[in-house]
Each structure stands twice: as structure tokens, then as C-alpha cells.
Length: 174
Length: 174
Length: 174
Image (cartoon, rainbow over all chains, first blue to last red; front, side):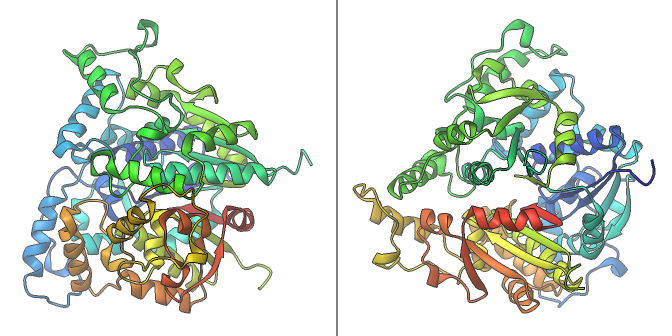
């Protein structure tokens, strides 16, 4: 049984609510079928595994090896403010309307008794889905590691992802 | 031959015209190479397999098990109006311009004698491509089953998709 | 070793900077692990492999077999102007802000000493990654072949992509 366990690797690159929901639904579905599921989060897909809200400034030792452009620190803070984490700040890929579409979709999903993104993430992690944060993207977007949700247990780069993808039966880029 | 038939599963999650066109082109290409192709449509990808226009209100027995939030029914109708189905209402992922980009792209494709999305869908179905609508997404977006195009023959959830993905040689998430 | 070489096929369909960067990072990662990597660019993903700037008008023999709609040539030129090629004109999938988000992201990546898209593309090609341009999309978007970057060495349609996908260990649609 352990030998025959099927594997799935999902790359969550999209920061849109609907794609993140699809990712979590597939992850939960795979885990409930007994598959070994890994979700590798990169770029704006990291928002799905971040604590809600604006990330704090990274600690000095976590700051990227910077070229030291004038004003870059201030721009990083501005970017962190523009790009808050957590499912409740994610917009759908259509109808963003400055955040109104997000609220509308959340409202309709709640009305249909559907789990929201954070609930699906917790459910997936409880079922053994492994969440990995891409270290390169964390640096590029200025997201400190301790602002990620506790479900994230690993940090890795593209080589680790590829090693998993080569072993997986179903690799999907979302 | 029947044993050796290669399988491909496409998840169409994107509601953008260019990604939907890519999906249909790959499906038609696969079918013409003798592959067994399944297109699983979810979230805004459902728009590609809907009849053109605004979906009618779901019949009472098709309504999702609702929490009964105040105003949810009115919001569902507003959402249905905002999210019309069919290829001719899909925007490209760039240059939406409030619908102008869509018309521009349709115009240029027609000028190049290319098939439009609906024609590709009909062609794919005629070649044996199977179109499945995700039941969870249908409920979340309030799309009644009888507003889908006749090419859609199956309704299923994530477990069915995963069963197909595990058997497929080429799984792609679009 | 040559027999056992693992294969990866990436379809780059997205014209967003973050997805194109993810694609190039995965391609470079795969090549550095000794994999045989092919990147098949289609629709707005073609922008990643175009020379920077507005494409020149296609030569008469490269013009698509046109229906000859009134004004189509002028619209094609307008479209070429709207859709410039090259990494430095690609917007991220969030925060486009009319080009400001693109500059912000480029600035922060440079501050973190990260390679930009064009550098990653050149690196990937130098490591043996094969870049293929989709002929159908080139025609639809009116992009002449000689406006592509020199790293692009092949032109092919969906059948070639599928032949490669069937042989690949990791097919991803980006």
C-alpha cells in the first residue's frame, strides 16, 4: 500500500481566489482518495498560505541580498501593503471591482454552505497534504517566513519541486 | 489499439478567451491523434460550455442548500447577469477594455479564417471529446444544468476528475 | 543516460510576468538537473520570446490567409501596438496599474539580485532548453516570425506539442 501510493504535485502560482479554491479542492480530493499530495506555492500563490493581512517587514537576517537601490525598502513596504495575504483578500479572476467581487463570491459560497479557502487549507493540511513555500518567491515579494500560516512546513526551491514532480503521477500547474 | 489508447485530461478553470481557445485546440488536436480526451470544466471555465447569454434562475430543486442569507437570491441574479456564458462573451486575458478587446480578437481571428470557440467546442465534441461540468462550481456560481450546451454530457465532482487524471498520460490544468 | 533522460514540456500560454518567470525558472531548474526541456509558447505566452517592442507588420507572404474584412489591417497594426513583446513590457498578474506594477516588480527583483525574464530565457536556451513558437497563435496575433528572439528555433502546431507531451514525464500548462 505504501509502495503503491499515488502522488500528486500541485504548483499554485495564481493569486486568484477561484484558482486557489480549485487547487485546495483538488488537494483535499486527492488526500481523501489516499493520494500523497504536495502543494508548492510560488509568486502570488503564496498569498493563499499567508496569514491574513499585511506582512510585517522582514527581519534584517531575512532581507534578500540587496543591490541597495535607493528607496527599495520603502517600495517593499508599499508592495507588502498592496499585496496582503490570506484567502479573504484574494480576488476572483473575474469581477474584482476593487474588492466587491471578492465579497460577492464569498457571500454566495457561504450561502451555498461551501468551505472558504482558509477552511479548505486547514482541512487539506489535516488530511496530510504538504504545503511548501517557494523560497525564491518569498524573497522577491518580501514575505517573511514567519508570516506564513502554520500549515506550511517546508521551504524549498525549484529543484525540490522538480524532484517531486518527476515522482508524481499527476503534476498540475495552477 | 483500444488498450493502447492514450488519454488526456484537461481541466478548464480559466474564463479567459485565449486559455479556453488553447484548451479546445489541444482537445481537438488530441482527438485527431486518436487520443481519448476529457475536458473537465470548473469555475469560470464553465462559461466555455454554457449557452450564450445570461443563465436563467435555477429551478427550486436545483438551488443550492442555502444558508438563507438576506439578499442572497438577488445577489445571485446580479452575479448571473455579470457572468454571461458562451465564447462570444469571454474576454481575452489581456486588453479586456470593457469588451472591446474581445471583439477585436474575434475580428482578427475571423479575418485569419480561424474557428471561434463555439465552433471548436462543437468540433471537439463531434470527434469524441468528453465534456464534464463540475457540480460544485455549478452550484457556487448559480448556473443551472440545463443552461449548459448540449455537448456537455456528464456532471461530476473532483473525485471523478482525479480518477481520470490518474489514468491519463497528459493531465493539464488550464 | 541518454536513454534515461527525463523530459519536461511546458506550455507557456500566459502573458503575465509572474507566470512567465515561473516557467523560465522551472525550465532552467529542469535543464540543470539534466532534464530535456521544451517550452511551447502560445497566445500571449509568445510575448516572452519576442524581441522587445512593437512587432513590425508581417511581410505579405507571412500574412494570414485573410477573409479580407474591411479595416482588418489597421486593426492588426493597432493590436500589435497594444501588445508589445519582451519581458520588460509584461505586467504581473496583480497590480498592473497601467505599467507601474511591472516597474515596481522589476525594481524589487533587481534589488534582490534576481535575473530578469530575458536573462532567464537566454540562460535556459544556453542550457539546451528548446523554445517552440505556436504557428497558429503567431498568425492570430499577427506576430511575424522574424520578430521573435534568436533563442526560438522551432515553429510548430498543436500536433507537435502533443507528440512531445506524450513522451514527457512532466507536462505543465502555465
